[in-house]
Image 1: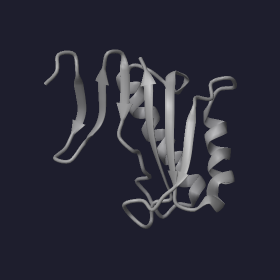
Image 2: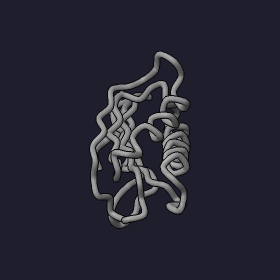
Image 3: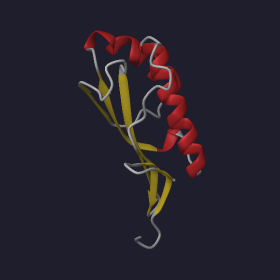
Image 4: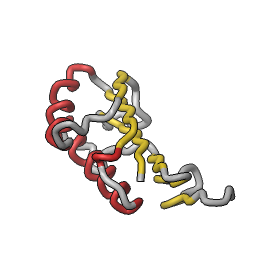
Length: 117
């Protein structure tokens, strides 16, 4: 292990979070309850991001970049409503959103975040 590098919630395939050099890298976060609509799934994903960022000692105001993978672009406006409510005014980070087939067909959105501590 590289000195100063810390991994959290390590599994056989991935870690949910790595901290290195004052930067937090999150694995892709998806909804735990995939029966929800896009707003419900987005809220769950953002709550998971909040929880990990809190564990790292930071918050969503310190996000450096977010990559969003969305299954259906028709859901883009509804996902953005939840996203915009989650951010404080003036704290919108750089972000990219792409349409993608996700690993499970019931998932509607996945987000990958990098943040500063």
